[in-house]
Length: 313
Image 1 (tube, rainbow, N blue to C red):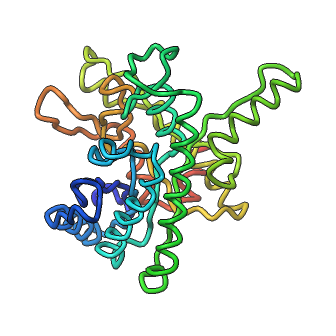
Image 2 (image 1 turned 45 degrees about the vertical axis):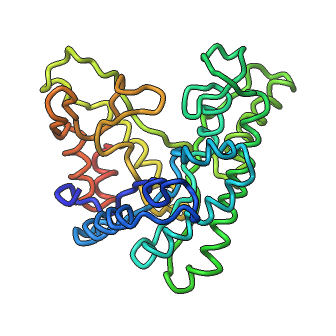
Image 3 (image 1 turned 90 degrees about the vertical axis):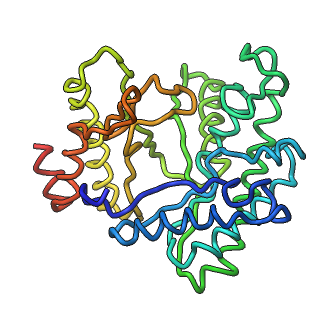
């Protein structure tokens, strides 16, 4: 990251690495605190600001067993306790907090489609779920996530923000939806879909960013796998649009490429690759910078406006 000129890195904190059974009553794992202290200190020593996500779908197994995780309102206070430990231990250095990562994705993938933990869905989903209700549970989980988010934000603003001078928010995602036809019912269905993905969780701007992936072609030679010109074009176009938004007055805090490295995807496993760096899964996870890594490094180390506008001509 330092060699590329990156000045920010977004990562998540594992709930159970801090609170092993998910609760404050179960005790704080000091080794987990030490791990994240070391990570944060190392990032800062290299001039990289940590953007920390508190929950990226790793609901503690202890809370799943105890009361069903986010299906229960009990999760709200336990999540707030976890958040407070993080604010207290890391907030002197972490100035950017993200309460939840894509709450809609967590609700739908885990409780409607059954393709992510905890793997719940209705029988008609045909996803081999052992239990669940796809028409009801995603809304319960989404509701409890909203309340957990609100509690964490209120706590931070009331108790920590004044001293630590940080910012806190939420990371949302949405697919863009268009009506199937011009009929009133299709238009209403389109609006309802976007409201469930975005409007329920936040006031939003009509904008979407996800990531660029390609199939993990195991027969592709390494030198060919590193030639990812389509990824460069993808990020270039998004950055041009971002520059336009900044000029229009948008309060942009950062641009985080998904992802720095090829990784294990929640739904697709190792069948796709998103990284700026190629990870060789067959030879000790050795990493190789793709062409896009060099392009992004060049972008980060040149004037934003000149780099984008010159390369767009």
